[in-house]
Image (cartoon, rainbow, N blue to C red; front, top):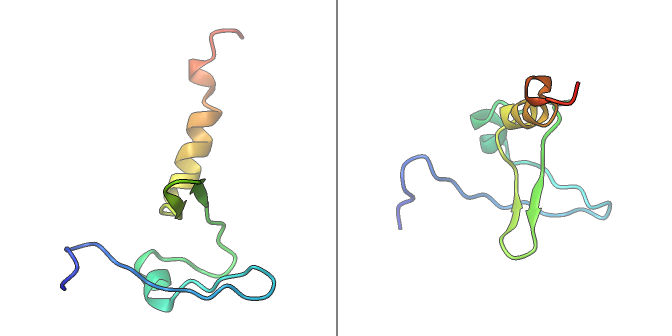
Length: 72
């Protein structure tokens, strides 16, 4: 079965310390470098998602956007 364009699947093994290695192809595709911080999202019914690394800064900015704060 051919994957739809832009869709990927990889596997990773969880080590004794609970660590996983992100496959090289995924690191290259998403420009993940050593020392980068990634965001893990979890849903008990749907599983774990790792959004693109830019999503972390967007989420942080949205959560702390002072432009929406009417109380100050």
